[in-house]
Amino acid sequence: DPIFHVPLLSSINCAKAIISYMIDDHQHVGFVPVVIAKCGIYLKSQALCTEGIFRINGSKKRVNELYDIFSLPPDFGKSFIWSGYSVHDAANLLRRYLSSLPDPVITHHLYQPFRDVILSNTSIQERVGLFQSLIEQLPPEHFYLLFYILDLLAIFKKNAQYTRMDSSNLASIFAPCLLFRPEHELDPAEYALSKQVIQFLIDHQQEFKVPSSPWYSFMTRQEDEIVPIYTPTRSLSVIIPSPKEQKIKRAKTLPSRSRRDTNDIFQMASSLEVGPSH
Image (cartoon, rainbow, N blue to C red; front, side, top):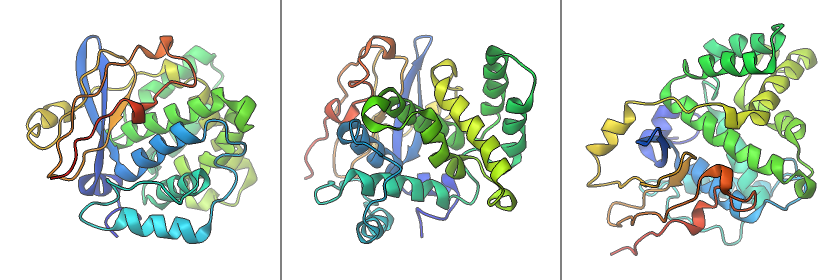
């Protein structure tokens, strides 16, 4: 399987979506797997008012179909349209991908250091700084995926009056996907500690800075195939490269995250224009 059950970088090398963002007026880009970006865009556009999103299961049959679609070369689901599939199917697929990673989003070697921050006798701001330092130790593909997932979950947290999924509920669902160790899988106390870590990261996600990455120079050498989004915004933006025969047009400019309404934040689907295939 080229997408699921393989290292994150291997999956990205097969089918990647581009994250574009600004830091101090400098353009930076990174990558996340297409399957994550496609699920995220669909969920942000269709599920912000869905009660129990991420908690309620989708159809096992349809999720298995989606698994096959996003595993199938050469497209790997890039041109997939969600007609006939529910938001619960997409949420299940997103969690299934995260759970399939051999090394989790928060990698095994940083498993205990992340948890030690919660155990430390420190203030909230000191913990933010400690987590920032640990995030910067993650491989680039892992910290970009972590930021994407935290931004996604923070959006649903803000809509908890509709979804009934606050940061505690979201952390309960995503802790086993993001921060786990096999030998602790069935230990309630270990699970509770990992849940506290994820809940803190969700609650304070806007305070973390996205580390810069050498991938920016990589993208400038690949602009004949993939064109990144250039928008004067500090928030993350996402574009899914179409198949090679398609051309991707420049995204429309977005206001800064602090000025966007909760229900408009990260609605990239309406900001992207993809040219027709030839």
